[in-house]
Amino acid sequence: MMKDMSGETLILVLLVITALGFDFTNGFHDTGNAMATSIATGALKPKVAVALSATLNLVGAFLSVEVAATITKEVLNIQQTSGDDAGQIVAGLTPTTALLIIFAGLIGGILWNLFTWLFGLPSSSSHALFGGLIGSGIAAIGLSGVNWHGVFAKIIVPALLAPVIACVVAACGTWLVFAITRRIAEGRKEQGFRYGQIASASLVSLAHGTGDAQKTMGVIAMALIVTGHLDASTVSHGLPLWVVASCAAAIAIGTYLGGWRIIRTLGKGLVEISSPQGMAAEASSAAIILTSSAAGMALSTTQVATGSILGSGVGKRGAQVRWAVAGRMAVAWLTTLPAAGLVGAASFYIAHLLGNVAGGIAIFVLLVAASAYMYWRAQQNKIDAGNVNDDWDETTGSIVPADLGTIVPTAVAGESASGTTAGPTARSV
Amino acid sequence: MDIVEAIGKVLLVGLVFGAGLPALFAVGMRVHSLGSDQVADEGTIVSHGNPAMRMLAYAIFGLVALVILVALLWITRQTIYYYTDIKLFPFGYK
Image (cartoon, rainbow over the protein chains, first blue to last red):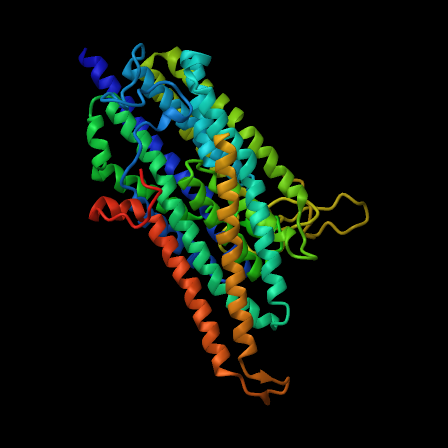
């Protein structure tokens, strides 16, 4: 019995660490949603922008007071959803299995977040987490463990609609803005709208902090309830301070470190953005994010922000929209749930195969190894505050700016191989 | 048809605030520009601006700021209710 208890506690500790890790990846993945447009137009210097966003996310996270401990009910049928037992796992599941399901799900979410970050593709962290949970849920208890209705109504349908609505709203806003300010001098326009950009971007950051940190808090709360370290009934009166503080800190630090690769794609890769477009895009994002959460249909902040940026390109006559980049993003979005699901399922199988404690440690080690590898790959062509605003490389369409290429001898005979920097390099990104 | 209703609401409110606010801001900028000094390329002032127009512009900016303030209160409504028991809005509480 004692061995069971300490084994369970070890998995719980690893789970909490992993959950905070997910929160961290969520932070840097979503910085761009609020700040990419402001960084691209120069309304805010890159470091200032991420510092502002990090602060607002921190504040927002601390403002979350009524966190749902039934977070998994959106996608899985492993928790009681109402009554005195709300939050407890359903009969037939041991706490350890429930912990492993969540743990494996988080791993699926983190690895997908890192993978898409490596390629500079904005993708929904929420979907990554839900995908991972669905995968590990199916691996653990089969198809009946999944709340298919919730998945369809609360995740798939909104995901299809979010970018469309955002695109429409932002396109209208952009069109109106340009129509109304046609006679104003360019310089004055850029300057004035920069203030607007800062205000709207700040709103998006605050909304993000209040909405997204809660996910991780809910996951940790659930793990604590399931292992008996927290009473489900106290959750509605606020979570233990260490849970709130650690989740707030994780998302803030992630935001500050700034997913520059993703910021670059959103700010430079999709649309060559000007100040008025930036403000229209962020205002559209803010309005839709806030309205949808009130309507009970929490849309992905990433998909809304991307849709808005696209819309701001559509709304301005003569604006350049790179639909190829948008297409790559759409593919990433469509594969998020299944891909994260596969990783989640695989993680659960490995853990289950090796036995609970050894399995938990094993998948944690695998997570760290895979994360380290992807981080290392990213450092090979590093995007940071210094080159985030460099011109987009039209020929490769990759996030790596043209002049980051290493000295590569050209393939054409007769050309000097003495160190011409090649544009399209042979690296695969 | 719950989903359809929710979508309709999000689209409508999104348009009003998401497109309307930048438009309002743009109107403010337009009015301010109309009320400002017209300066020729060399820097000489061609005609002086209308202070009344500029005041109107500031009033419009003030309105935009007010809407942003309301948005802030909306974001923090649950927190405010939790600590002070005050419901600032007639709907949207858990």
